[in-house]
Image (cartoon, rainbow, N blue to C red; front, side, top):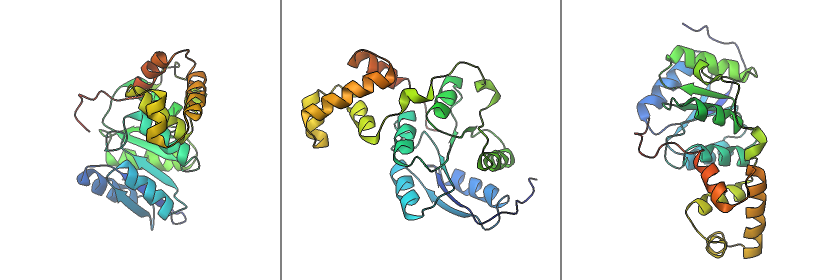
Length: 217
């Protein structure tokens, strides 16, 4: 059993759409951190509200398969809106490339749900001490540059609408902004992704997503 950690009271937001996962994880974390405050939620929107309502939050633990995440794109949006909140990703996904991209997008850890609860709790403790964690299968040296996805929340929204095939005029209407502003965002998005066309940007953005046909984990 992991030894209980003597520490100041911490606040975690745990976001997973499976109640049993939230409950089991909460029990494991409370066995390690004394007086831990856990705010358990079931989707990304609720996680964002909890982060704001219970500030300061020491760690957000996010399931990238839950409602509102839109794959790893949701992680990018969360990090853009809450850059000071450390994030650990907890997922059933086993793709090494996606694991590395999660860290490239600002996560401090990618933790497989298949890991024993004791190991998950120990990894969280290491993350709070400043470590970056990736499973051994994701330790390949090749990964995307962190700066490649340094998009603002609005740019993430524009990119998401581009993926839906919407034109600048339609994006402007949906976001209630000027078409010239949309064009400026698109130009910046292409530059940050290192591509030259909207089509290439959409292809690159799709690499952030999980397989939509995969059962949620």
